Length: 158
Image 1 (cartoon, rainbow, N blue to C red):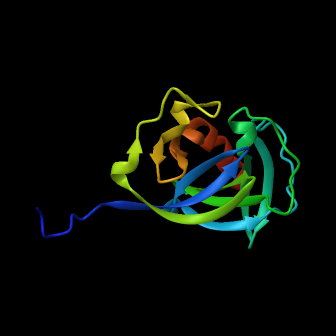
Image 2 (tube, helix red, strand yellow):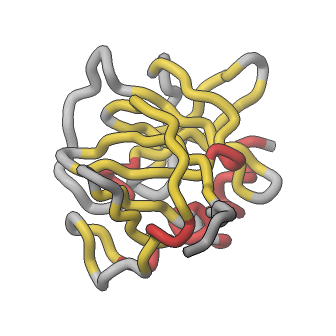
Image 3 (tube, rainbow, N blue to C red):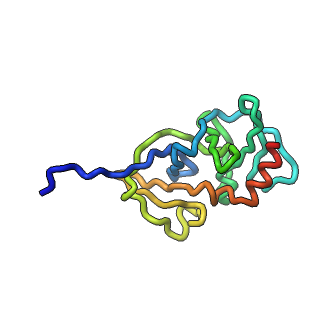
């Protein structure tokens, strides 16, 4: 019997919803969570880029995650949120159905993603965390906004 407690490495994640699934993104990649405000459309951007917002003086590209993942679109409502994330040098807002939680996940509870989860290809996923009563899909933001698309978004900002 061990009399010392094992130190379990954990990551802190923001939990948000798309459709009926719960997703997580690491807290250290999240700058803020905002209510949806007026989005200015920008021509010649990928379909999933809704446009830009002026967030406290910073022009921030906005991505609809449902569109990005090829999921059914939904009307925005009171619980719709924009999660502002930092990817490399730029900040991008991700539109989600709701953002409701911050939790710690033991790293050993994270498994590699299956090929497709909730209709989303594994390339966008970091893994799946199996917790007591929930399954949490962890996003790989570097893949959700790949480098070519980031270059396009940087030109929107600048």
